[in-house]
Length: 142
Image 1: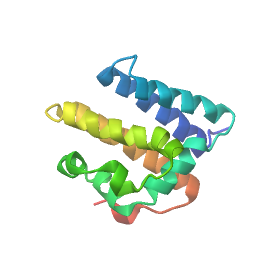
Image 2: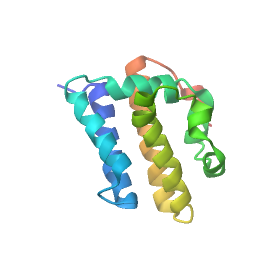
Image 3: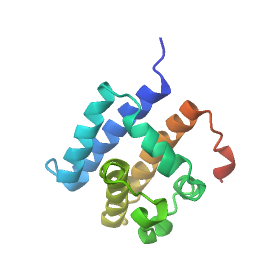
Image 4: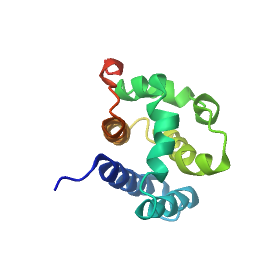
């Protein structure tokens, strides 16, 4: 039996957080919090994806620039303001992952292989979330 898109999304998010720990260190507090939140997906499978869909997948501008791998755009991007994360709970989950995404781009901006890998993690997350939601994002891919 093939894995569901939600399961693939959660697995990819877990692997992305592990990869970010290679940049920020194994004891990074924000990433440890994210790992704890990901543990809850074993009980409430949609806990992370629902927030991701609301703040990332439904933001056409964000998705378009992810697929364009627009480093300059994201280096100037104010995630909290731009994606409109309002609740503390959402800021601690998806807000932290996008903030770490931006910091990783800043730190590794001269390392093209790492930048490509970081964008690819987000592309996979968008893909699995869009498949789960039956949302066509192909018009956002240039």
